[in-house]
Amino acid sequence: MDSDLFAKLFGYFSIGCWIVVFTPQLYENYTRKNTDGVSIQFLSFWILGDILNLFGIILENLLFTMLLLALYYLFADCLLMGQVIYYRTVYPQRHIEEVVVNDYGAGGSDPVIPHRHHHRRSSVSSSSSTSSSSSSSSSSSSASSHISGLSHHNDYINEHTSLLSTKINSKSRTSSTTIQQQQSSKTRTIVRLFFASSIASWIALMIGTALFFFGPGQHKVDMSQWHLIPQALGWGSAILYCVSRIPQIMQNFRNESVEGLSLPMFIFSVVGNVTYCVSIVLESTDPTYLFINLPWLIGSGGTLFFDFTIFFQFYMYRQRTDLNSKATV
Image 1 (cartoon, rainbow, N blue to C red):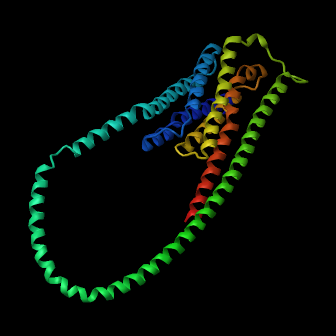
Image 2 (cartoon, helix red, strand yellow; image 1 turned 90 degrees about the vertical axis):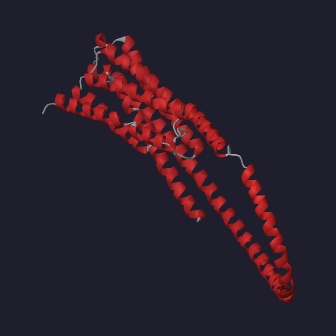
């Protein structure tokens, strides 16, 4: 089997990953009826990157699998963005209207007639209870003094038990809060360091790529095959793809949570990007070919560093949540 066939296989496998990539997030949003976990800036950058990517691929006449993937990127992004807009604008308004209608329907019956019957029954029962209470008052007076003594003793015990329980609960809450604050500070520091290392790795990738093509002993690139407009579109999409993760990372960092965000979506994204890059490299290792496809390689491969940061946030925030839940038990 030649490399061209492998390139196509990896390309179609990448398409398969991207076909299902948004399904977990769409399902997560649907079950929660909420999209607060998804950064709107993240999706906006992603859609802009897909638009530039599509036009760049068309103008540069790249692989057919790349064109199919770009078209599906745009479709899936718009679908997810539509869901986000729906659950943030349309759905809350409809939900409020349904609640108002239900409350009005529940309170719309006339309560006057049942109250009249209730008043009549209560007047009859009160007259009968008056006669019975007079006969029982003499028998209960003898036991009242004994019961009164017992009640004072029970009140004393209950009061001291309540005070002791309050002190214990207060100490427990203070200890739990201190532990949570320490864990939060530690988690934020670790996430900052990991994010900084991701940025440093991305910068190192860019420098290494530049040295590969333009450094000492550089590979010869036929610049006559390099076209300004499609390359500019490709580089624009690459930058937008890489930058798109940053708003999501920052939102997770501010909230110290990844609640509402689907982990499988990013897993499929990583696998899809890796196989996408492999399909390009397997097609040819000619320096000119790689240089022409470089924006699309960077756009897919460069996002991996930031995706790994999001993976790390999933690990840290969920681990901290588990520890906090154990501490409060």
